[in-house]
Structure formats: C-alpha cells, structure tokens
Amino acid sequence: MYHAIKEVVHSTLGVSIILEKPRNKGLGHFALPTFSFAKELRKSPQIIAQEFAKKLESLPQIASVNAINGYVNFSLSNAFLGQCAWEFLQGDSKESKKADSKDEKILLEYVSANPTGPLHIGHARGAVFGDSLARIGRFLGYAIHTEYYINDAGVQIEKLGKSIYYAGRALAFGESEELPQECYQGEYVFELAKSARVEFGKSVFESLESLEKLSVFGKDKMLAEIQSNLAQAGIVFDSYVSEKELFSQWDSTLESLKTHNGVYVEDAKTWLKSKEFGDEKDRVIVRQSGEPTYLAGDIIYHRNKFERHFSHCINIWGADHHGYIARVKAAIAFLGFDAEKLEVLLAQMVALLKDGIPYKMSKRAGNFILMKDVVDDVGADALRLMFLSKKLDTHLEFDVELLKKQDSSNPVYYINYAHARIHTLFSKSKFKMESFKVLPLEQYKAWDLQGDLCDLLVLALGIEKVLSDAFSQRLVNKVVDYLYALASDFHHFYNATKILNTEQEEQILKVLVVVAHSIALGLDLLGVKAKVSM
Image (tube, rainbow, N blue to C red; front, top):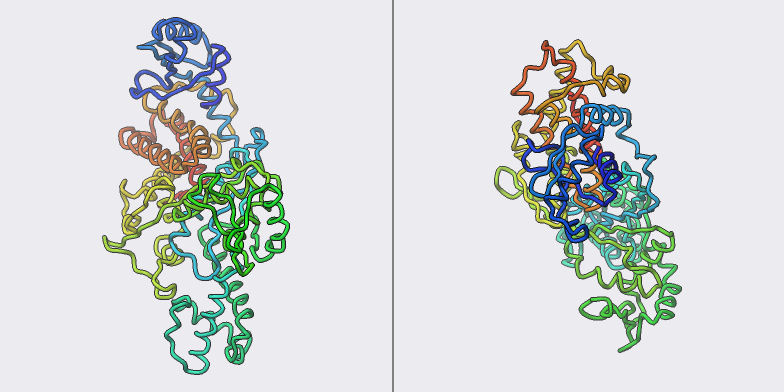
C-alpha cells in the first residue's frame, strides 16, 4: 500500500517525496512535508502545500486532502484500500515477492560458534536475528544465502581433543575427574568421552597420540548437537564452510596480500597493515614459527566469500568482536576486493532472569546458560520473539516468567491472542475466512469504511513498508513493535465494538481477515507460528 500510494503521488507531483504518518490520526492517513522544496521552488512551505494539495485532490486513490502548516495531509479512498486489501490477500506469505526480485545477491553469515561446546544463550541471539533477517529479505525478493563458518582448525579443536582425553582417562582408568585448567570444563566433556569410548574402545585414552582422532570426533559430535539445537529453534543453514578445508588456500592468499602490498615482515613475523584501515595497530598473521594466526583463517574465508561473487556480505558477530572489524576489512581491501561490501552487525549480550534472579546456569556446559535449556523452558516461539524485541546492538535483559503471563505485558501472548481472537470470531460467524480471500476485487472496492475500522485496515496494510524498513535498516525489532501495535489496535477495537450479528459484521470481518493475514505474515517471517486458538 505505502509504495503504491507513494508512486501515485510522486508521478502526480513530479518530485521525490517522503510520506509520514501524522501524529494526529484525524488529519489523515499520510502526511507529505514540503519544507525541503522551499529553496528550489522559492515559495513558502505553506504555499507549496496548498499547490500540492490542489493537484492531489482529484486522484481516485485519495478521499480527502488538506494543507496545514506546510504539510499535505490526505486520507486514502475506500476503493484504493479495497484494491490494496484484495491484492495483499492474494499473496502467499511463505514465498518471496518474485515480482519485486532484487538483483542483489547477499551472503549472510551468523552464529559460527566454535564446535567445542554446546550453544549458549549468547549465540542464540545472533542466530535468531540472522535467521529472521534472512526470512524477511527473501520475502522482499533478495537472494540470500545463509552460512555457518566452522572453526575446526587451530588450538580450540586441539583443546577439545585434550579435554576429551583427560575425561576419558578419568572414566577408564580412575584418574582424577578434575580436568586440567587448560581444558574445557563441564559435564558435556565427559559425555563426549563416554561416546568416544563406545566408538573407539578404552585404548583411545592410553596415549596422547589419539588427540587428533579425539579432536575430530568431538568436533563432529558438537557440530551435530549445534545443528540440532538450531533446528529446535527453526534455524537451518544453506551451507557450512570448514576453516580446516579452506586452509589449503593459505599460501595463495598470503601471496595475494603480498602482491597488493598489504603485509610486511618484522621480527620474523608477518604483519597485516591493518592500521591503514582504522585498526589501532598492525596485526600478526604469521608467527615466528611460521604458523598462521587465528586471523589468517578469517582472511582466507573472506577471500573465499568475495570470490563467490556476492554483491554484499553480512556478518553477525558478538559485541566482543568490535575491534576485529577493521583488520578483516583491511585484509579484504589488500586482497583487491571492495571492503565496503562487507557489513558487520554486532549482537550485544543477553541477561536472563527467572522470578527476578539470574537464570540457572548449566553444569553440563560449565556454567553457561544453554540455548536448549531456555527453548525447553519457554518454547522456541517465545525465545525468538523476545530476542527480536530489542535492537541487536543493545543489551537485552528479560525474565522468562514474563513469557508465562497472559496479558499485554507479554508480547508473545498479546500478539498471538489477537490472531486467535479473529479466528474465534469466524468460528462463531456464518462467514468464513477463506471465502473472503477469494472474493472478486469489485466487492472489496465497494466497501464503506469509516473511523477506527478504516484506521485498523490502513495499519494492517502497512506491514510491507515495515518489513522493507526493518530489512534495510537491519532493525528486525521494528516488526515486533509493529505487530504489537496492530494487536493493540485490534484488541481496543474488539473491546469497543459489537461485531457478530450486526449490520456491519461482514464488512468488519473482511478487515479482520487482513489484520489476521498481517499478523500471521509478520510472525512467520520472525520464525513464529501464529496461533489460531488459545
């Protein structure tokens, strides 16, 4: 609806415009500010607004228009709203808008947690955000490929193998169950050791020569568990990329950096000139021993990304990676690619409470809050919606007991209750929801909407603008805010209006079909299933 009316107004006035929502609903559905045209047209905003209003008043899409204090305020006609509603109901919320397909091909990488332990709640925030951003982008017509980068090379994986080895010796030979300080802690390490004993036998713990075998075994087990945890929350990746496999490209990557004058050797170490791109200092990428550093793996991976010809790459990292951005972008530039095509979003920490006290940490994971534990406790839908309710780069704290309340303080309940209420209305009415979705266009263009019912329809039809803004601004919380506002307006309308067995029943239910469709669509793109009964 928004884009349709904006195009009509733009074509009529012949200038680029911005449409806003008036603070006072009584002024109209949209407001067009004219202040930016004053200098070019050499007229006051008041006069420009009057001239613009005169041009718009004859448009069939507009019911009324007025000029006030430099703004052109206008309301949409019933016929235009009917056409927008009819077209909206013809779409399939689970398919992208192929008619609006974008040329941009985007690689979205997120989670990428080291496969050395279970997913904790910090990983979950980026996981839920990345999955929802991908869903929204695809609906809008973007070609989005989601990817998980497996850090399966280096000291972390070696440390996992060593942890399993010592846990296995404790189980097999009665040695101390207190693992060395440099090992991963937690019951999951002993679980891996038990599985390794079943797989390889007791002898695998007799010699340190088994460390590589145990490392690979543990990595594979933890990656499978991570995939299972993500799937439990509705998150599935298009592809997984192995750091270990990519390291075969290190020599050619280093040579490319040298060719583009991006590195130098000092103190027998190879340094990346990351300071030239805003880093606080240059970074070592090859140690004195000749062994590549952790940064080298990311350099190879980002070279691989850009060689796959994505128009844009988005990384979702934890907030502690803020200082890492400049050095990665420096490497991209020194490899001969456009570093501006890499966008990094940072996910802030999550603090969970239960009845006002910190959520119980998992002994299994060594004093972390596991993603699986929270999903088991409150459900994937509640977890997703709460994680998406705030901007990704702001600290998030919430009490899981809130998710059990059945009132407006619980957005999960409040939004779903609106959708379920509409379905309950139809279950008691002679009219059926599906029959309204197949009515001919003329029956929608002929309705007569007034007041709050008309405002409710306009809000419901605004979802695609909300989705577009949420994706372009990377603010998925805008969708949650919108759904809450739509649910709130519906609940107020429902409580103030008799609907069933009235002369207006059919017309009201037509509008409520659109409201339900918007709620279901919005929730679906957030990875949440709309409830039809509660």
